[in-house]
Amino acid sequence: MSSFPLLPDSASTISDQIDALFFFLVAVSVFFSLIITIALAFSAARYRKGSTASRKGALSDYLPLELAWSIIPLIIAMFIFGWSAKLYLDMHVAPANAMEVYVVGKQWMWKIQHPGGNREINELHVPVGRPVKLIMTSQDVIHSFYIPAFRVKQDVLPGKYTTQWFEATKPGEYHLFCAEYCGTSHSGMIGKVIAMEPADYEKWLSGTSSAGIAMASSGAEVFERFGCKTCHRQDTGLRGPALDGLWGKQVKLADGKTIVADQEYIRESILNPGAKTVAGYQQLMPTYKNQLTNEQVNQLIEYVRSLSATQENQGNNQ
Image 1 (cartoon, helix red, strand yellow):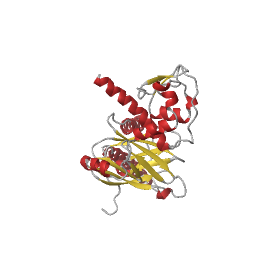
Image 2 (cartoon, one colour; image 1 turned 135 degrees about the vertical axis):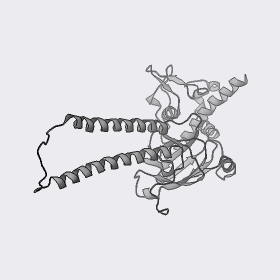
Image 3 (cartoon, one colour; image 1 turned 180 degrees about the horizontal axis):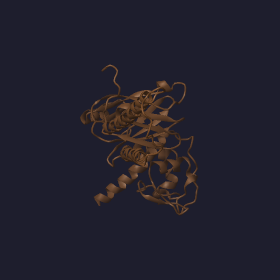
Image 4 (cartoon, helix red, strand yellow; image 1 turned 180 degrees about the vertical axis):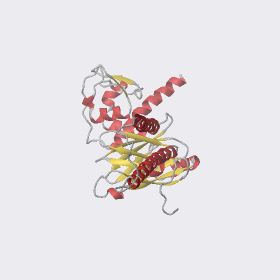
């Protein structure tokens, strides 16, 4: 049976927990199925037509039994709900120290870029023992990023970010699939996740031919090329909100609401600037939809994040 395993490898911190819940659900289903099947078979045989078994004393209702078959399943169902809810939260809330990697789904490939600039297609290199958070969007239709060995799957949507995280526990190569039908070559949208020891991963980062300009530096070039500094740099006269120190802060909007300046907010501000207007500013910014690629938007986001990191470092030095 080793050549035909019932389950894929278990290679992440969450995978054994997912398997435990799965096997518990299977066990509960088999247990109650056996009880019901045995009771049906016994009753069908004992009280079949022509049987001499006594039918006296048959009850039309029996409160203790009715309570038992209502309360016991309820307790089991609530236990399963609590267990599943905890696992769901654990799977969807990434640790604060997670390494972030950007993923763009496209018919029919996965385009991946690390913050240091390393690019991959249909491959994802990650270090063992470190949480990895994927920030994903689609260039065209709905895709789904699925790594069976890690027991994680997340839809990848056009026009917004979705995220998922995992932590590999052992080195190896693991299958990567698109689990959402996305067109004629959907079955060919496959790849692999390569989990490496931390030292080997650092060597790969510095030695791969895809190592290039860091995403923040590429974002600075895009920022200059499209004239963003005209409105968002203090040394050129602000006509829009300043970007220094913006990342992760609460932004007050013209309608009185507040929002956190994260990836989704900055992406929306670039592609659909009219959706949210910052308090104290007029809506002057044009949309850059269809002018910037998803990769350029990701680079701009990393550039905005780097401005906050630079400001924080300057403050610490002072």
